[in-house]
Length: 107
Image 1 (tube, rainbow, N blue to C red):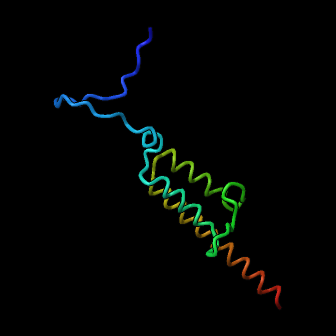
Image 2 (cartoon, helix red, strand yellow):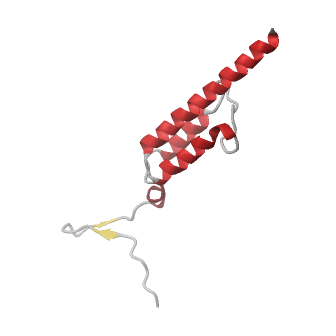
Image 3 (tube, rainbow, N blue to C red):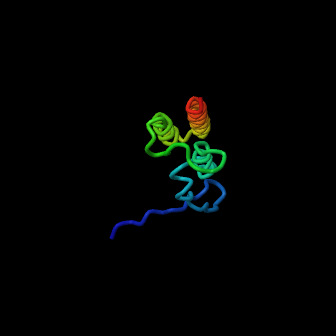
């Protein structure tokens, strides 16, 4: 019969057994990951609430998606925050471009 993995760890010297690491924390290793994901979604929204760009399909956000994955794999929350800033910059540029296009159409 195969041995079962011991999911708890014994702390040296104290004799206590600590609980196993939460599977969610073990996978991400990043504090507030859900909040960072929500911030990224909000970064590409128009102030009235609709998405300016498709987070998963827009070619303008390709570099953002790649940087997000790299930062996630590196468990680097500071890099994730930088990616959110980049997404905000791109979304603001999209608003400016649309506003400029509308201004030219009115002339």
